Length: 443
Image 1 (tube, one colour):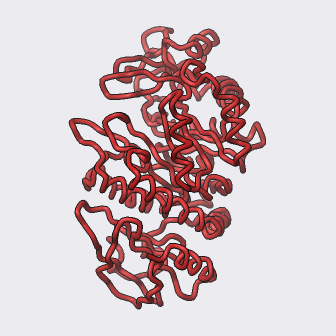
Image 2 (cartoon, rainbow, N blue to C red):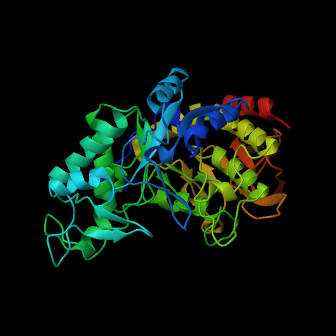
Image 3 (cartoon, helix red, strand yellow):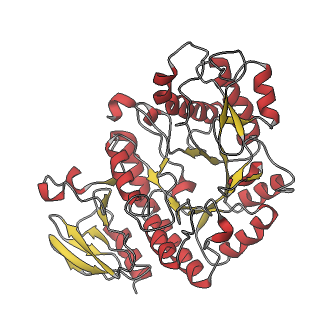
């Protein structure tokens, strides 16, 4: 797959060696960030998707889609980004391929005919995104794609000091637009995420930052692998449901990995909170445990931050997050080795057991995964569970938290918060690293 569609660059060291804290609280963000940092958490990034401003809707706290610094919401942001950089902490933002009709960049794009048009007139096509409209930058026009890459991502984001961002959407191209290249929008709809990923990758390359800056997407199609360095699982509900809750994250990681996407992660805590469904403390603890064993550990406040528990909502949650972020940081050398392997071979970091062990009994296991060839991770993704069954393949496997050795088989493993079932190969070349983690974090 990776020979055919391309391989992603290695993730930068900062993205895998500490947690990325997501906050969108305007002027209060940095005070809250300092409280989280003071907990002892290993933090390498601050992600503020609201750096471009907020649009409050009935769905929740959404963003103002005019991709530039909103000085009213973050008055001292340039100085704060510089101060974070001196501490080795990167600043991340948000962008998507649409422009709000009430923003200045929409008018700029419209003036030079960079927007997709209506079928029945030469007016720009307006997409209703729920209480506001946005125009579609027409990436089939090479000049429009280059404009977005340089004018917005290059000048407004990278040159401003951002080291990463959520490159959202890409899957919403209307199928009745009129495009610059005359292509059928029904066909263009599928390849749109690839064009969107390329715009982002080209912008990073233009600044010589391919191995330093990064972005993450939820949309994709054949060929996105060559441009998008990192996927995230999309907007999970803030619950344990099999339909769209925490346990869909593992399935998504395994599926996308088998399609040649090496790197995957999720919104720690989930995103979508509607109809009275809000995060519980149990969900937060279980998602913290899951996120620690993904290439990137990144939190999100969700669409309704005020209604939901956050990392800094209680001392217990924050202490747990700090501990597991340290575990995540200790694993960085192993994740770097897996990242190098992905660059060379296309192998994903999170893998189904059958990728290495050809046993029909493993074909439908969707709730645990190999993290590289030398680690098995089986997060607790069911509400009320204090243990779970874990299937171990051939070999001797060391329980990360106790150091106990297990042989092939299925075991019911006790799993309190902070000790998700994780096992490592006893004969791994990384055994000393795993053993050091056991010694440091042994209960």
